[in-house]
Image (tube, rainbow, N blue to C red; front, side):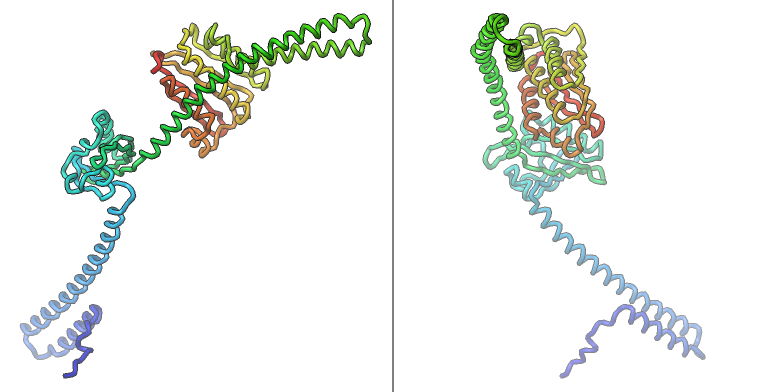
Length: 410
């Protein structure tokens, strides 16, 4: 039997409603002569048909919304599960409510065994307080917070360092944690730090060696040369022409200047004033020499009386003053620099400030992160002395190199 395909087509909801309205009109046109009861029944039937059409329309919209929601859910579920970072959902107690595959992989525990457990148990014992404070901050501040912690990995028993970024949900009862594995970066930073430390030690040994060679060889030879030239000058005054005598006198003067320059270089490499008289005297001595060479006025502000520090601390701060002043002369375009040294509540505070161009924001961030080799060396010097290093710079207002070191060191 042939099938009527037209009868199988679904009539669109607007057409159904139009047809229902037409049917009502036809029904109303025939109401003449019928009773009120029949009229009310016909009107009620029409209302039911219209309501039926409206329900069908709403049902169709709900189906489309459901299909779209399911499609989006599948899409975002894939993004969640296959993300290159770990995602954890925790409640206020730190209990794990959900975790993606990458998160479970980072800690080396099956996802089914993680659900319902406390995230704190995954953190190394010595850093659990750091995580607890971080979690409290996430729920209290309701803003994105971050911290670095070391987690246990049950697969290979190798701890991993992760950057945690967390933010509370709208309900305030849960928070989402993002885990980024930074173990490789930390390893590279550690190798770089170790390399920089070795360079610092080698640099000081090299400075001492060069200073010693300058003293034993060049300075001694220059002294003898100066004496010989002085004797020649005294001997030719009576027999040589005035022109030759003038050249001999100029030669004697040049030998003295070279000798003085070499001794200044030698003192800069291994300053005896630092060892004999301490950091304040060494800073004033270096500032005076630097001002003569560069034309930059250097002010020294020291809270007197200032006690002697350890040899390592004094050398660290002196080298930082040298590096910072050199950077000012090369890059800052400033004619003024200020060095401040004080001791407050058991902390040595040291700053070198200029009034130059400052850094552009991107460059300032780059330098603060320590990617500049000179800055990296300064940072490692402070780290070896047990202190903290920071650079603050605003374009157009100058820059400040700041160091804080505990009096007792490490």
